[in-house]
View 1 (tube, rainbow, N blue to C red):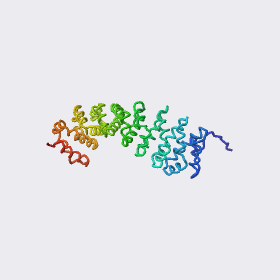
View 2: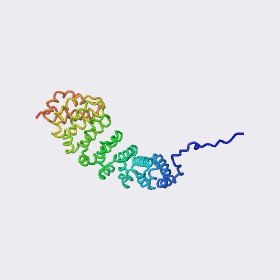
View 3: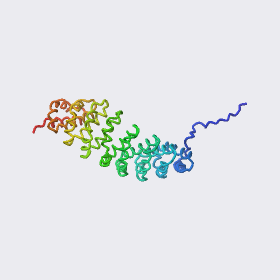
View 4: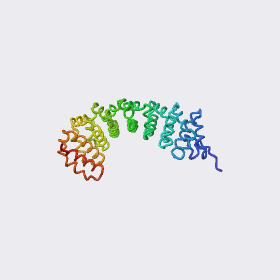
Length: 340
């Protein structure tokens, strides 16, 4: 006769780290109650289950109707790492949808999330920056970050954070500077971006050059770039093996050299030869930005004189298969060959 074996293992398909979901429309209310439970284990299991549950977009609207946003906001101050980590992850998932972003701004969750920028645990800081970056992708979100005066905080974090988090900060600042550049200038962002042009990771160099291009749109940004010696470093990046670095470096030079001071600074540091070399680059964005930068430099008499030697090389791209490159080449040839 067969005996009975008593097992200490859980039944199959039962995950002890997640709370069982209630059926149908009772799932979210139950999770919300457990998120506010006094017992740590209950909160941990509830927030892990909620994070998985919210990956279905249909559940986000229901979660917001049940004030899940406020419960997650309170969990950001929890003493337990798992709870803080999964709470920020939940907010990140919700911020991927318009309703979630609106709720994030309405409940002012950005303030407790920003406090996690100083968290001792790397994963908590990363999730906090992921959440803020996702919010900044829309104009209202970027405006909210600027109004909350977090631009200066983000710029300061560029000096001390891990490389993976630096990428997120650079993306966040990129979106914020589309709304307002003054705060970034006041926080010495140009100096911070210029230092990152020497970084060993190509992705960080590329994003730093992109942010310099964003910050150089106003006149004050162009003047600051010239004063910081940014153009010399950007010129050195034009021979970088990574196409994104070359494209963004050429784009930043193009933006800065709109002013007379920027033109002559770029000419004095020898920017024309590497830019001319990029005219035949395989990447269309690199070609486009290089030709536009050369067009700006040709507006100075000294630049026009040097570029007359290379005008045929640029003219060859008037029939480029990329329409924007062809148009830029025609304009460049017209400016270079202009006679008073």
